[in-house]
Image 1: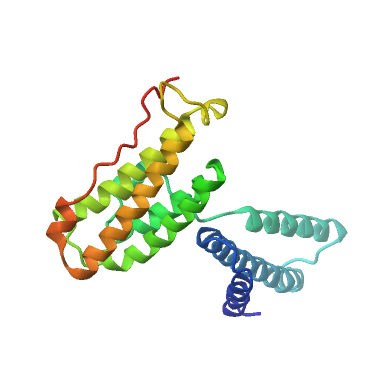
Image 2: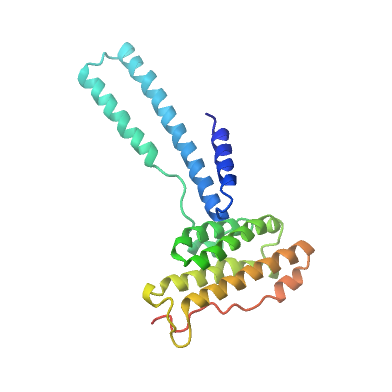
Length: 232
């Protein structure tokens, strides 16, 4: 089966499960692509073994039972290595501030997906919506000047403020996340912050679409994302 056919079937399966989040959909798409790559590796390895071993025995040196067993063991070992070897790497939050602006929304979305399971269910749903908006924002940033004030505003929101919000929540011990600490509730702060990020992404996308870059650069809200009493 061709890799395109496999990916097409994966897409159809995703469409049949309409309740699946966009971040989960993208995750499954990456899993499908990784499966295609591993299948190709295994196919090439198998072809090399089926043709290489007989040719070696015919033209170089006949193989006895011990040699055949060693060849089979080598094949099994290489096959396991081919299936376990992964070429992709998770996006690290430390790399987001220096990521090229055109690639930043999708890199932030990938990072946010990796953090999704650490968030409470209401925050997961908000993260899903933010992920979709990041994906929609990506094409709008392709031609935006990296050094412009508008680019700085976008970068500050999705490379600094959003990761700081999520990481601040994750650092709070589990048993304290729903408790009021000095009048602050970490889970409520997280939800409020994600709602603000979601609204800001909508505003930025609309202003990029209208070409009002000055307004985009100067009208941003200041996000109150840091946890007071974080050390509790």
